[in-house]
Length: 277
Ligand code: ADP
Ligand code: MG
Image 1 (cartoon, rainbow, N blue to C red):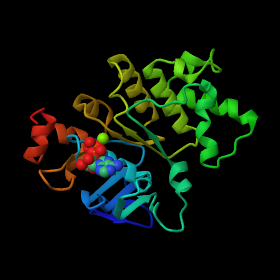
Image 2 (cartoon, rainbow, N blue to C red):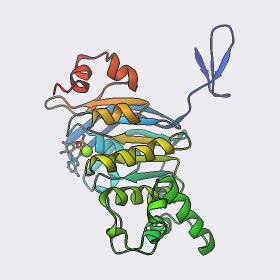
Image 3 (cartoon, rainbow, N blue to C red):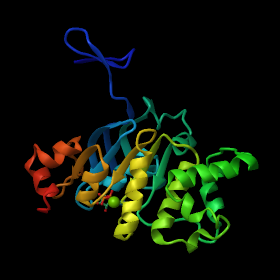
Image 4 (cartoon, rainbow, N blue to C red):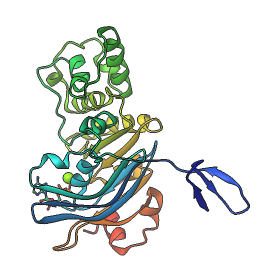
């Protein structure tokens, strides 16, 4: 099959055309350094739109660094350097003509440790990111947006009667879903999640996974996880990162999740997904 860039279709033998998978984001030959320490070597990855992509691999192989590069957070570290391209809907987010708010408005981020503003009310937490990215919302639309985001994050029913209570009073799992709601407020196209369940108990983990499943479709999700069952449950595609002794991290293998777990092509992937590491 060949991809027709004009119509975004795959043209198969015999002239049959199918809609091609659209890439929400693409990393092209991304290398990264902290000072002279090279931590990623020419990483290329297509992130399909409306799907969940899981980044798996041992600690220290550069998954968090790669995720932060997708959101232009890498450049916040003074010693950090970067090569390669990161495209969002085909446009380079690092284009000198593009402001960092372009990435921030379109790409949300959720971290391992839930980090709502603890003293701020639940409702104010949801809209706290808007001013930072220069998105204006009238006070009338604000209440609707709070409800929309809390609903999408699967938290509305639990908090609708205490929207003015402080965010810090919620359980850890609720705080993480509040952080998801906060990242949804700018209506991003992509949501990046760095081990979002590592600090949560199994019940809260399940709720966050349900939230991810519900977001899928109109949202593109990239999730870093150390939990292989979680990767198998939530993701459509997986990329296995590895940094072999003394070398920078890279992707050993990537593909549909079922194939990565059921029929890995590389012995190192097979070992990792089967818990031999
Ligand atoms: P992972 O998320 O896969 O565990 P990281 O992306 O956190 O891996 O780290 C990749 C490598 O980059 C590690 O060697 C780590 O020590 C290094 N690193 C990460 N962040 C920084 C930083 N801010 N300054 C210097 N080195 C860093
Ligand atoms: Mg990490």
